[in-house]
Picture (tube, rainbow, N blue to C red):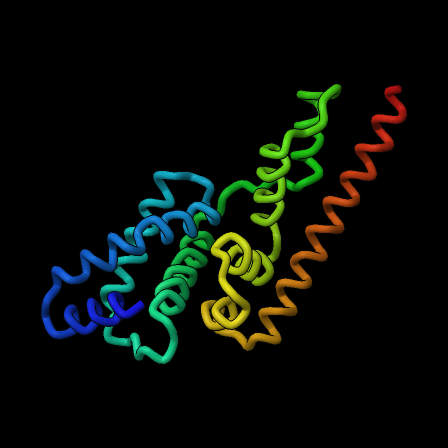
Length: 188
């Protein structure tokens, strides 16, 4: 976006107030990205604020070779990874989540919203490289080239990570679905 590059140039020339425009444009996307990691609104806002501090301190490193969005997401993603490594959240397996949902609603199929939440939680327990690839590609709706740039890997590697992450998710969900079907037959 040209506006981003203009604002970056202004900030680097000493007009610090131009950074406010960058924050306004990118605040919601960065909070949403952080939320995919921590699943806590207040914490995601704090993480995004930390990301903006990091972006401001490293603005001189933006070379303009890639889109500003790619650079800003890359900086933020690296920071969010670090935060999550330092302060890990309790994680639940998809199997445990399905058991809980079935126990609460034994006679109802899981609603779409509940399925979406289960998928989001399943993504959260994926190994980091697959989780990051899926979050950037699907949840941030980036193309493969931008995803690879944000992750700092080749397109082939990003594609492989996406494939492997989907396979792991598919296996967990199919296994869980088969177990649920057998359980329903036994109850009938």
